[in-house]
Length: 59
Image 1 (spheres, helix red, strand yellow):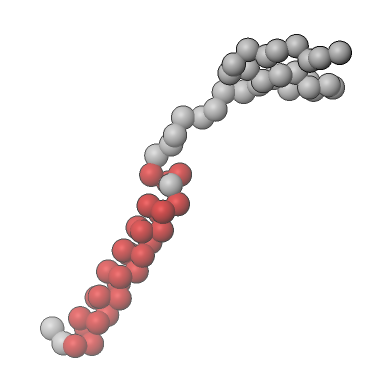
Image 2: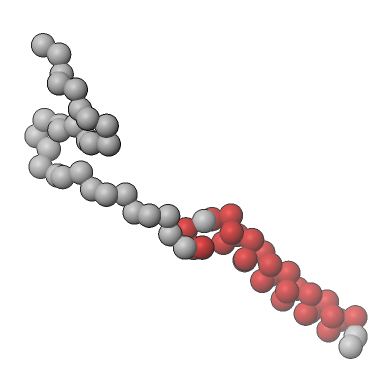
């Protein structure tokens, strides 16, 4: 016997499943994007390194 068709945007029921389908979270803020987070970390490291280079070369 064939499986019944499931309407779009709905999760088909699984055998023995007691969980309901859940809504996906909306796209979050800046902290959910690893490339932006990495760029912020690298930028902060460069600022600190620039401070020490400036101190070594003289004010």
